[in-house]
Length: 347
Image (cartoon, rainbow, N blue to C red; front, top):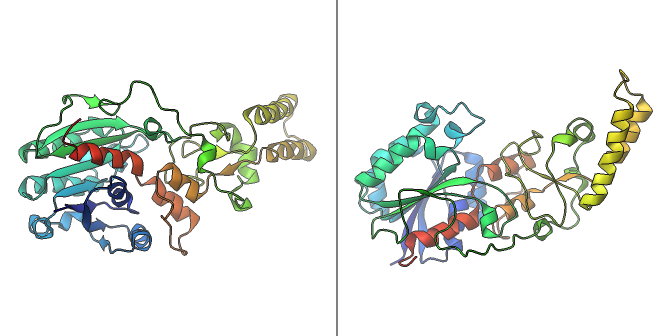
């Protein structure tokens, strides 16, 4: 008999794809989220129904009726993010996880749990509450802080993970937060170049607008084709410039550096002038346009999040919505590898 998976805070189906990635026998018996836009994407991409409902309304009776043996979830991270107020369990968005912490010890069918959250969750009261619930329910558990670059994916996205199971203890040590997969090869794998995830013939709509080029280009994280990294993409990508994700140029690092040096020369020659002439501003903008700087497309971001090629958004989904939904999702490959570890009999 295969695993019967309950997917909570299901978003656009990242956990569903991770379970498929792990190639286990079983199926998703229910998926739930309050976000109707995310649910529409989930339904379209996976051709299965996701329930639009508040997790606080979930009962032990429902979980037992579903016969759920595995729980996969990524609760709201906003109560624990560096940019937020970090109100932890006092934040209303923590209420669903608090409810689940009371529910887990009552759900006797559950044998396996995987939870993902933002880095920083490991220091929270919500984490302590979650671990107490696992111990009360008789789970063995392990914690991790991992990033996709450790899995040959050219994207940095440090996240907290906890895996737990009742069947038997894990063969690797507890009492610590693992920052790599246990018994991972000592020699690091080479990370793929960013060129491996690029789309062909990208529309000019993804070019960085002139006003952003003029005012904010110097704070942008710019990636070149041969580089094997990109920064974490957040829900604010393209809407905010700094700290929300990388931008791409098809130029080499040397060529773009040459152009930036010319821009710097213009800036230095005009720094004592109260207002640059229109001619100077235009020459500076013309140089910056030569970099051909653009945003990564939603498909490219999805690839960096390890979503499979068959993943797709409904036609009515706007780019802004796509970036927000991807920024709130998980890395499929990282979670898929952790699901394999969760159910492994030998480590």
